[in-house]
Image (cartoon, rainbow, N blue to C red; front, side):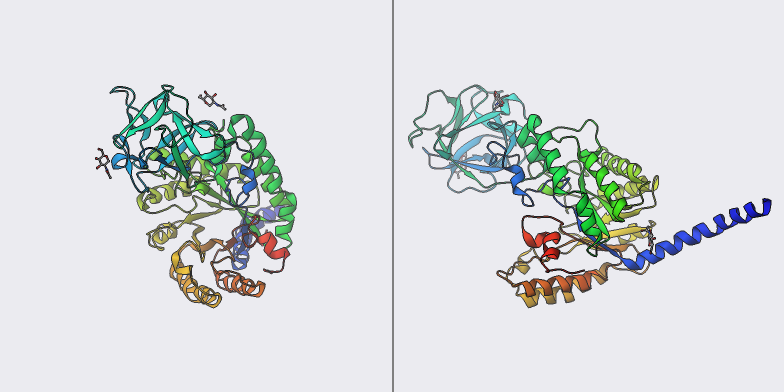
Length: 504
Ligand SMILES: *[C@@H]1O[C@H](CO)[C@@H](O)[C@H](O)[C@H]1NC(C)=O
Ligand SMILES: *[C@@H]1O[C@H](CO)[C@@H](O)[C@H](O)[C@H]1NC(C)=O
Ligand SMILES: CC(=O)N[C@H]1CO[C@H](CO)[C@@H](O)[C@@H]1O
């Protein structure tokens, strides 16, 4: 009895480490074949446009860019010098200084941010009616109502917080003192022709667009229907072994900060249950960090601003999100990797902030779990090897790179064959460039069989997908297709598999 338990104890002590090492080695040669659950817990309008259909005035979302041409001066409103001083109406052409970015309060009430980031408001230090762009924290004086002409949505008047309408009194004088009703004629100085050049459709826009009354129901319905248990079954039976799940920082806050709504954490809990059931690994991907790490809708920027990493508090807040998520799922066998941040963009997201954050984020994961820790390379002007030495000092670390034959003019006129050659030649050497024998593993965390080629045949898409699978299959950690579901067919791996474009 005594001997037996000794042997048992001995074998536990000796065999356990061997087991776990050999298991890790077995699986390392396997490689992750993953798909991104994009557009699920972090909204991106282009993935599922119908999510925005029910928002009143849904062309006036946060971050929407507007330009206003006075019908009387025939010139555009402009924040002189980009902001910090008066608003004028003397520009014949419109670009940055003539563009106003919306902050939406409700469907008719807004604040207007100018390029230097001040808000349009009334000059409270002066006569109270001159229109300026000086305040950096919008309040009542910076809150306006947009009134549309009933039968022509591009003709508007703007009601100021003092109850009067803005008018272009002259090219150099814009004031809030027009009291009369309008016939909407070309002689009315309070009428502007508005040009709307769109904006972001992210989580901030959809939740703030619906508002606190309607957003909870709409978002929960989306979370409960867009990705369901069957999707994990589909993943596990179609040659995939993992999912990368984009999440937003608000998932870790209780109560959920407005305008975001509560419930994405419960959806992620479900994902972990289903992943466990079907033997699917999960890469948690912090896709939207507080303040936005790239200014795009998929990091939930409100108006294109990129503020992540500018203060220690902000970095610590982000570390806390990572620690919260890791601790919550550490015991679930499907937790395979934690990606600390997605697509930080240079130069706004500095290497210095990221170094600091990656160290602290790595430690936060390690407090609870041995999962892989994924560091993202920066987009924009950045060296693809800049985090290699940092990551080499970590255990089980991974560098994430994203390879799209899109988003750069170099792909605009490429033929089918040139795209395929680019994958075999350029992507192959880019991948080799970041792959080092003792360094971090490499994840190609986003790619897609889509390109700028017009009217390509199914066979051409198949060849393009196969070329990428051949090259990206060499990545030492694996790859993840963007995405599982998307109204744009080629961006939906589900559609690509079901229709025979991709076979794994
Ligand atoms: C929008 O907000 C303004 C200012 O708070 C309020 O007067 C107005 O009634 C609101 N409109 C709607 C449709 O909720
Ligand atoms: C517009 O008016 C402002 C204020 O008087 C002036 O400084 C600026 O030069 C004018 N710009 C043009 C293009 O006329
Ligand atoms: C962590 C992990 O996924 N381990 C798996 C490695 O592969 C073996 C079979 O080859 C599985 O049994 C482990 O669960």
